[in-house]
Amino acid sequence: MQVIVCLKQILDPEMPSGSFHLDPKRKRAIPPPGTPPVLSPFDENALEAALRLKDGQGAKVIAVSLGDKLARAVVKKPLSAGADELVLLEDPDWEDLDHFASARILAAAIRKIGEFDLILTGRQAADWDAGLVGSALAEELGLGCVTLARKIEIIKDKVRVERVAPDGYEVVEALRPCVITVDSDLGELRQITMPGIFAAKKKPIREWKPADLELSSPAPARCELVDLYLPKRETVCEIIGGESPEEAALKLADKLFDKCPA
Amino acid sequence: MAKKVKVLVLGELAEGRLSPGTRELLGGGRDLADSLGARMGIVLLSAAAGNTGAEAIAYGADEVCQVEADFLKNYQPEIHLQVLEKIVKKIGPEILLLAQTATGRDLAPRLAHRLKTALAPDCVALAIDPDSGLLRMTRPVYGGRALAVLVCKTRPQMATVRFRALKSREPDASRSGEIKSVAPELDQSKTKSRFIEKVVEEVKGVPLEDARVVACGGRGMGGAEAYALLDELAQFWGGAVGATRPACDSGWVSSARQIGLTGKIVSPNLYLAVALSGSSQHMAGCGNSKMIVAINKDPEANIFSFANYGVVGDYRRILPPLIQRLKQISKGSKE
Image 1 (tube, each protein chain N blue to C red):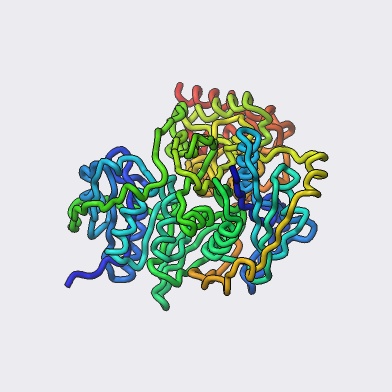
Image 2 (tube, helix red, strand yellow):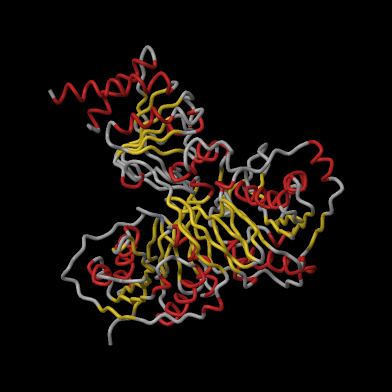
């Protein structure tokens, strides 16, 4: 079994609101000083899914990250968590790619890796929240795709996936290889341990450039970002106070009953 | 010659009727078609269309393309993709709209890829640019901290739309339109995945999306037991209880109750946000509530910048007297 996990480096989605600023000219968020980037949390869920398969029936796990200015401390995390190899696709031309261009480059890298049974990634990157790359990658490679997985089991030549549904879950079987996007319901990435960090130092890292993938130029963008702005907020909060929380609670009850009776 | 279908909606059925999201797409799509002076079509895939074609016309469609087959009963990505790819290519719309539902979010990215076009997912506003005639698609990004406006260079201009972002029209039974039945074309050998079963996890009480009052607890609730208090509070209005993603991920509450960007989207009359910080990812699921009341220990919590009313303090000391007082006043007002 060989499992490829695609992980994206993003601005920390948990950064305080006060640190979030836009560069209106370049139409993008400015990386906040002092808050390092992170791996998209849903991609970490996907890595956890891969590591559980490795724990179960055994699998070689290859982590792949694509972008520009990849912080080594961030993108090497999968190796410390238990992945076996890391492939970094890094180039100044690979900054701010749209989903289609990202899928095209990832597909080229995965073809170059060659052998794989499953490709896992997060349900969406927690920066643009689009949830397109996993599906587009499946289409680029001509593979099946199961989205929003919360449990993944290998059964003979197939994979059985429980996928999150609004009122429960669906069970789907897909032929391998295929692409699976993973939901946070699967569970958080395991804790990084000291032995894990030491073991990671000996694990192979491959770094590929456009020429290594025989990709000439990025695919032309199909979508244009014409505006990026902060939403206006006009709500003013009336704080209901009191001598004690209990007193405030009573005042709130009167207010609520007045505005919204049972 | 009749005007061309420029706006096409991919509809969904729920219990034999058009889904609420589909009715909203027809409402929003109608406005776009009118500003383009064009017709709006809808494609309905189902095992049995029933009366939904006429319903779609009443809600604003000019043309209905009905596709009925047993294999369309459950959503199966590769079957739906194959059938839809052919139909959409044949109609050749300028604009293609889907709802951002479980089906829409799975189907749309792959359909866009097959149609060699882009996709703006999870849009909250759509408008025709008066100068260029192009579709401006607005969607929240960075977990709702910012809004992005996208314009598509390829055709169709394709978007999925967030629930409650567009408004359905009142149905007008006197509207006229055309219903066509189309036989689906399917090559079963091309399907790479198979639907096995659907497991419905029972959620007691009112569905979150329909509740007039929602009480939602976050990470600060501290554990599963604390949600009983929220239940009692919500019960006062016959409402429902929700939770944030961290609370669901901790296993305190079933993920079927998750409210937010990757959970459910609610817009009740009253949203009681308890011990939750108000991250933009969470607010994406409840920001359209008519009134938000925040209860939080931390006076700096982000939720206070969204709330109409707030109480700063520990929910453990606030909820019990609040519930007691509400019951007391209610009893008094009935006597």
